[in-house]
Length: 436
Image (tube, rainbow, N blue to C red; front, side, top):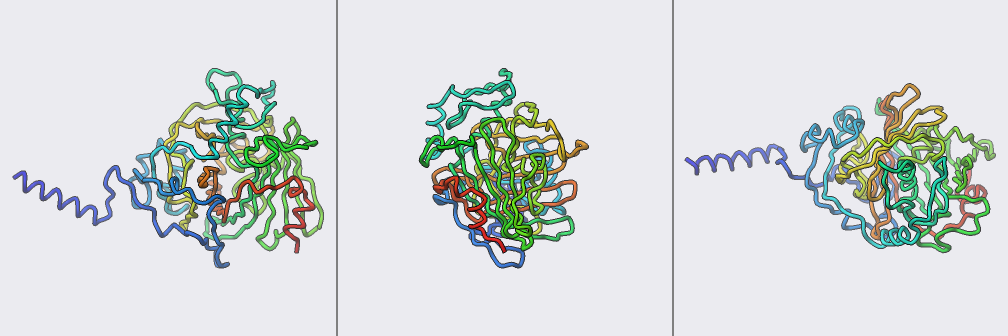
């Protein structure tokens, strides 16, 4: 009798496997249908060549062992409802609007490698030298993490220190990331936006000389970044340029408009506007959060264990009928949850961000409109180069009120390029990117 039952159970197991059932506790290999490898299709406009990030692909993070999978052809998403922000859970449950999505859980993978060692050494060297004024502005920062011994719950300035740790998380001295945005509306219509994302740091430099600060710096600039556009044709030659300062001074924002052949200064309130081209992000939500600290009131909402793509894969992925990053790596992290409320709301009232407690990176962002309704969402997938600098190849953004989505691909990611401030003058950018 026992032998007959064992034979029947074994036969039933094989039948279930052949029928596509996923055994409990197992993961699935990445789907080749979503893995584009070295070329990303450009909606009938040919292909964009994808290159590994500067320094090469990190084989350890690229080939993680999947211990569980949920979503498309995997386990029910309902099992991880409490391990995702509500907007992301809802997205995974509505493939008719956002396409199929599969989430792959991997084991916790701690940071390591040359870049992380440099960052940790700088944190230890300058430990205890930073401080905040009454308004929460950071002073005397050099490099590394400004507040490594963080006690958010008991420190009156704890949430502000948490935000400054996010701002000064491990990064690059400079970077360039050419990106393509596939913008898709609820009817399935798509359009293309192409730009470079260029950034240069004056502070917290770990690799390039001069370090840890670029001098001379007479204007007291913290960092500068630019978005020069190449597509669509009507935006070609449009160049955005932003300065963020070390002192409590409003950002300086300029836009070169090729149709006028003039540089126009932007109002600082326009940081709440969408980025040029209609991508589902604002100036204040780049990289999850880019607003000035003194423009917000911050509220600490506690800790929350979530599945986060904070150490994800690098290769581009796309469901042709849905979003980006649809088959990537996620790890369980006990995140800090912070609400940032605008002191002067123009188009948004607040944002919620979830921060990884080890790297202080943000993978999720949710903003609310002036009526307090959920509005724009962002999911960032943070990969790692061979040297353990961060890299990106995909970002997933959505306007959930309009069922409007932006799938952003970065064709290559280069860091520490020996840029100088001269490379970020408007004159130099116009010369480099040309104007029709």
